[in-house]
Image (cartoon, rainbow, N blue to C red; front, side, top):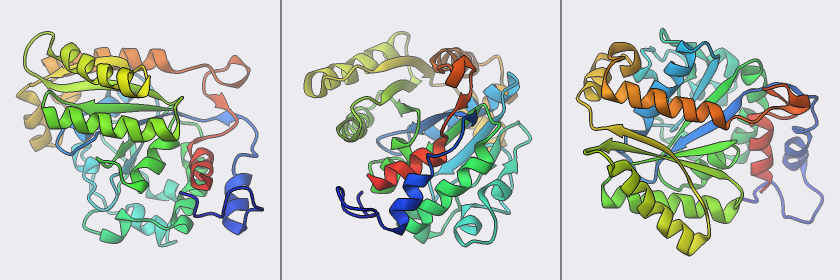
Length: 299
């Protein structure tokens, strides 16, 4: 991803912009969790939107960025009419903060745009526009959750690489497990130190989530020497598709369901992951997601 200039040489204009992005004073900036999957259809967006909603219900300020650009639908699950989206930001009409829309369930979401093929392959200039805009939007938030596109495209890997932590959503299907490993492998080769957490969705019997995780962990240990973190599983619950149809997160519409109870347990484990910021104050840190995205662009 070295399209900002060759390594080892003096950076050009884009490179200087990327490098200067990290020269900022510590501020209250969110912990960033990128939610991803190796293939589509794992329930990634449903999990991400419900996690964001549950965090808001617990009193946290949550920014939600739909990074599945061009075919985005997270705003629908959060009950939002997307009269603004990332398309207007990249067109220079509004800022990222101005594009953020309030969900009736708490999160502030920047919709990723739908049916716009150009959004699936951003240029370096467009990525840097986003990187510069993130600071104004994310400052003061507790969490930034990114719902990333499934798979291992260059664009997806860039978004994932700049996050604090990665949450991989898979399910018991063999192809989902195989593609989850492929995603983890690509990210591990780029950043061996990245923390990867796994949630198994659509669990059909007690203990299946642990079985699926152990299969993925076994392959990662053998071929990558990488340890993963198991966050838990979500049951194959009829309340989930009902909530999607109603455009109401199941943690709101069916808070006593098995899916909601499992999601809350996963949320508690996620809260335990957040490190203290600079000077020991949670959330106070020298750089946010935008600065890290600019640095990832430099490659």
